[in-house]
Image 1 (cartoon, rainbow, N blue to C red):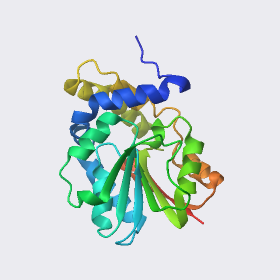
Image 2: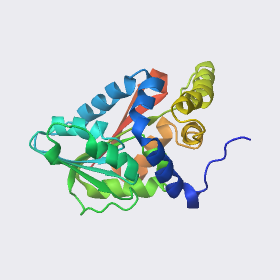
Image 3: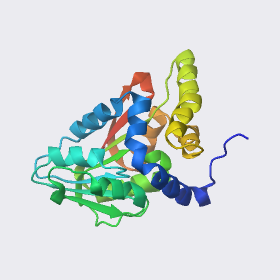
Length: 238
């Protein structure tokens, strides 16, 4: 039987449950499928924030806290709020032995309804999270709201390779190899089928850039890795 994505009404509950189930081995899974490159991409995206040492940052859809920790290192006199709606992911993040952990605040909440006042954060990061929100534009508007004037959003997620034959190879890897690797860690876990299928309707690099501009960001820069299989968007608030 072919895999079916959850509908919009079920997506939030499904994603929260499934990410909680795979949280203990999620970092290992990412190391395997990217050859460890996701760690470089996360450090790169934090550098793109250009934050000062006393910045206040939000790591949205923080997962196990990789980006949260990098933000904490980049802002040693600042504060980092880490938000996710998967309790399992947050528990893994809280238990990790981060330096400067007292400046990292982990919260469970919904990315579509951020529990923060407007103009609070110098930077917002989101790694592999925009694909999983129920309402993309609403989430981007919320991010824009909580950024200070001149603040920056940096998003890391899957992209689309533009060279047709390379695109086909990448799709074979993503849809056939990645799920099998994941199920070696968690036999029968259909979250590893969700991950590639969630990319089908997710905007490509240029379309996502246009959406970001349409909600009010003044400038968006795009950085591609692996010819666009992974991509980083850097969006600035006016």
